[in-house]
Image 1 (tube, chains in turn purple, orange):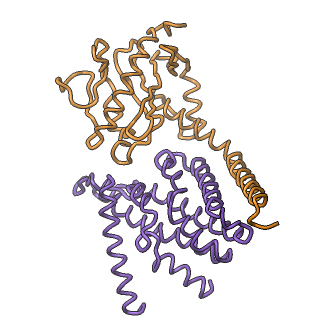
Image 2 (cartoon, chains in turn red, purple; image 1 turned 90 degrees about the vertical axis):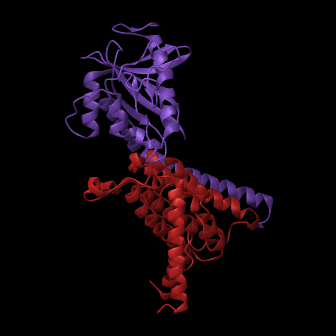
Image 3 (cartoon, chains in turn yellow, red; image 1 turned 120 degrees about the horizontal axis):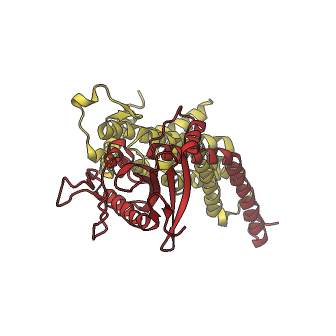
Length: 206
Length: 213
């Protein structure tokens, strides 16, 4: 990986993280994070769609009329989302039964449109692919962290596997299963991540 | 041709739509077999679970063999509505598909009754999109197993053949506990079951088939 690509990747994953820095993609961060398995499939879907749509928008940037570029981006994103939806339905039908409605809503995920319009429409294909992929990874990182808090507290499991000796010490936090649990956890994760980021910036990354 | 000309825009958007439409069709076509297989597996798994059929393994073929060997399907027409039903060829137990709006989306399930319709043998969920961890707990064995052996109150004047949640008589033989934290889903589930139980009872004659056959 070249130095420029590495910097771009790090910027999207951490310094300009779409969730805790740009506050994008919050809907799904709240909706699917009460089970880690659902979160992983959602993250894979968003990462694939962001990377592929950024690549496609970039490939077409010189032939896309400026006036209709937004509708072109929506068409590209919606098509990839439909493909991802079909693939998840075929490969993991049990997971799709739970997250199916949210997969369709990837179309409205602000991160994807944001990267397509903000970066891919003005940059070359490879950096755009990296930018889209890294944004997806940055989004996934936060969602997985939230799921790793919510699932053990809400269900006493991680990826469906019960915590050790769960019956003896664990008590369900129903609020962690419900949307307010996601709000609290997202706020705490955002506070922690931004705090760490500011410290890193103050010390110049040392 | 200029990129701003209407003809260019029209051609560009048409070509793009065709290309992506073709892409979606291709993915759909490539996974069609798998999707059908998954749907058949899910359906057979639900039927086998609801009728408590012995299944030799966990593959799609095992479930299909179990269902094909023991279950016959038929439909009942009542009040302009068609109810999908199943019968165990050996035991005479009969099941029907119930459906109704849940808290978020439609809930569909399969309820199996004893041949004389006096008791519920079992219940299984075909489709639901309730909140994971709350309403979605209607799929958990702990909740579904509580239906086993309850006796629908066919003489209920309010159509509450089965009660999920509080009742003036907590020990009633047609009552089970609701799911804590999912009151709306429990209520929706109860309404869906009772509405289709009424229709099923109206159309089905125990031991014979349907009143409309």
